[in-house]
Amino acid sequence: MISRRAALGLIGSGISTFAIGRASAADYPARPVRWIVGYPPGGATDIIARLIGQRLSEKLGQQFVIENKPGAGNNIGTEAAINAEPDGYTVLLVNPANYINASLYANLKFNFARDIVPIASFNRVPNVMTVNKDVPARTVAEFVAYVKANPGKVNMASSGNGTSVHLSGEMFMAMTGCKMQHVPYRGAAPAITDMLGGQVQVIFDNMPSIIQHIRAGSLRALGVTTAERSSQLPDVPAIAETVTGYEASALFGMGAPKNTPKERVGRLNAEINAVLAEPEMRKRLVELGGEPLIQTPEAFGNDIRAETDKWKKVVEFAGLKVE
Image 1 (cartoon, helix red, strand yellow):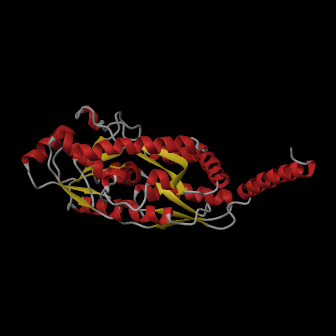
Image 2 (cartoon, helix red, strand yellow):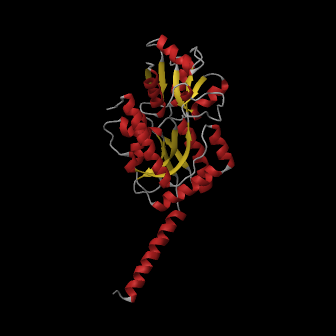
Image 3 (cartoon, helix red, strand yellow):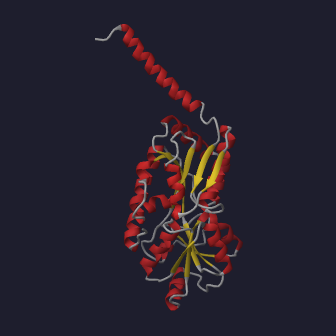
């Protein structure tokens, strides 16, 4: 048996620990939060981060400072986040490349599912198969015929090796027998610039960064990569309507380095979910192509594992590997 004094000491210790945990969440953030995005400004990941980061800055009274760290198919930014101090003051924009790279890259210095703590999901959006005005095809079937009739002449742009933009195109080639030259860029913005200029002919880009050009008529959408059509482009068919079984989508969210305090993860999850529930934020995310996805850190973690498994099958199906 333990003494009454010892018992009171244990209870007091428990209360102190509980109080410290609550204080840690209540006082957080006390300074600006560094939000790493593994792509240059202007792409889908950057657009979503800045949209949500602005509202978090307003709600929490501290700036969420977007730090663009492009390169190596998103791995440079991811590694920087993983190696940061796990104090809640460095977070990562989680995006499809994180799930894909786990099987695409042979020599990663990290294990994403193990080394990142899931905080909150944002949304899930389709990619859009889009061509420039010089491509005569107006349907997916016509595009397949065009590529096969012009071997070696069609360049497929992407926002980088291993992105969902890249893998969506690789899946399309594998399932249709089309052969296109992959041209990776350091983000969506420079890829779209060359699309507009005619240097590359097709891209399977994330909807947030491409939709304004589709609506303006400067680029032409042939299909969306989700199994069903998008409400934002209702006249654009799903690729699966022509290529049976084709499906790809992009899941976005926020993560933090392993061992980030649970109280701070919980605080961010609650604040992000509150932001996602705001009518104006929901409207903006829908306009960018995807409904808000409000869930717990644990549920987002389950989604990360499911996405990793899904894209592993695509990587293996396409026979891809990056050293």
